[in-house]
Length: 305
Image (cartoon, rainbow, N blue to C red; front, top):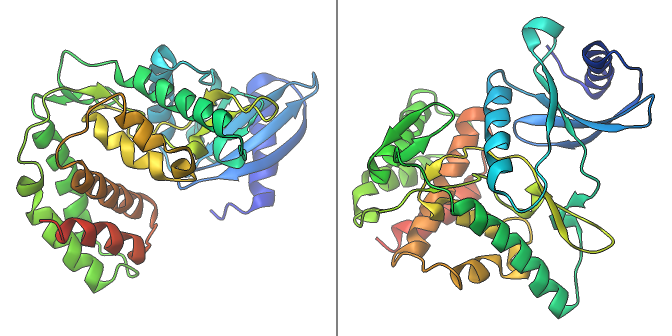
């Protein structure tokens, strides 16, 4: 089925009306990511609701569980889920209807005042620290799939191994030989990189960057958080490469975080390693492929082994 913009817009409006028994005055696509399209719906009561249309089945249930978990610990607003509609019922695709938080993605605001920048950076980091405060007595692993391990290295390597063999068994056409060679070296070097066990598990968001945070445009305050992806109980450093995505470096988010929490001795290598396999994950799941990025992160690790 070809999901062109007109098809999505009209069907999302119909699915909303069937789910809520209310007339949709408008349905406007406001965003698109690897895993879904985002619509802003306004109903006959002039209330605004977010509709997230999932590109693949199964993702909606995972995101709902992750949003519920984030809501327990975040210092800012995490949208409530009003209703869900499954592809098997509506004939089109899985759709999750959520609370609308008025604001913009935090990467869109432009703060120039030095003190305001520091204040905003502190808000972003303090929210992440609050999430990382949570841990699991069951160990490292996925609360979504209820799979745990006493060892972070064992749990993480099992995930990397799945990605590694998926790429080898179904190599994407755009994935270059140079990228494959680097991936092979990184996979074989896992034990060298993770030679010091991670002792504590921490709850992570999984995709914590300024694109997935919501800011108020008038006050430049952090007011919301969305789109956890791969949230689990992990090495908290797995969240940190995301702080450098979008324009996170403008706010020195990673440096700010490191002023609160001592990072591991080989953090820079692990940070690049985590980023590399995160991109591989998106390639396996959705076909994303940017060889320049793969090789940049991979070469950083290889040069330091």
